[in-house]
Amino acid sequence: MTWFLASVRDADEAVTALAGGADVIDFKDPAAGALGAVAPDVVRAGVARVAGARPVSAVLGDLPMQAALLRDAAETMAATGVDYLKLGIFPGGEAEAALAGLAPLAARVKLVAVFFADRAPDFSLLALLVEHGFAGAMLDTAGKNGGRLLDHLDIARLDRFVAECRRLGLRAGLAGGLELPDIPRLLLLAPDLLGFRTALCGAHGRAGAIEAGNVAMVRALIPGFGSDEAPGGVDFRLLAARGYAPAEESDPALADRVHLRDFVLPMAIGVYAHERARLQKVRFAVTAVIARPRRQVADLRDVFSYDVISDTIRMLAGAGHVGLVETLAERIAARLLAHPRVLKVEICVEKLETGTGIVGITLERTREAAAVTMLPYLLGASEVS
Image (cartoon, rainbow, N blue to C red; front, side, top):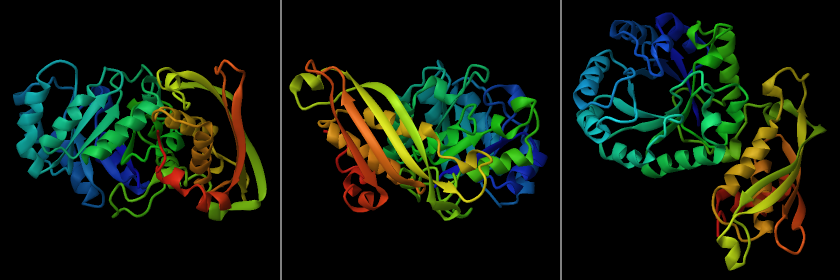
């Protein structure tokens, strides 16, 4: 399961986020920087209003990586009764000493380190987080006017970040100017949480108040399985985009075709030794047959995003060397047919730089075929060679 984190600036916004179905209520002052801290008394009042209905987190502010300064701020904020403390990993300073200085707090409150995609994040520190008892790591953006998360790190790089956190036993979160169309794309990565502020606000942007309708829309796009379930219980590689017109609300007798054509990526593919040593251009064409919702299409909840197709390919292309185009095509088919509304796919994979012309394969697979013959691809048994 992926949790929906809503960043709020006071107790009133906390109540709005809670009523709209947010899984985590996160106190942050959008007018005070990337991780602007809310006054401790305001956080304490918010914790009281939430009254244990959801986990509550708070940021420590845009503080330099100085051990004593961060420790004092963390002690003060922990005393408000929050469940999670978020601190920014800013460039420079004494990162290792600062993280070590916070280790004693890990027994009382869950610590989450926030890396910034637009500030050359040092992911070598992830292992150090585990050593000092941190519960998780997040990616965010420091410059809120400089683009959203996906403008700074592509889907394949984000996939590796989430996978590394999972390998280390850290919860992984993604945030940073996220927009509604980003949700199905990022759900493909199965992060433990997605964080929002701007998307929850109205015309005044992240500095304005959050609005109940926007909270409800984000909630509708992130499948929820009950507030008492821990993150990580569902593999969104199997259930990604379930919030987009669930199967029980679709009509398999009606179908649309969503297609992606002439999508070219450089990747390591081929059985020859020289093909392992260099990247070559590979072209993809995908058509997915999608069951239409029974109701009239009105918003993002009713559509299957073509970004899911291109991002699935990007993730698989970025996973490492693949020996056969047949393997790659089967893997793409398996991932796409895991979506409840995808009934059938046709996939063409072509190598463009073989020296002997364009070579490749075109295959067609249905949901029934995916249930049995492509299970190894879905579960990752043949991910890379």
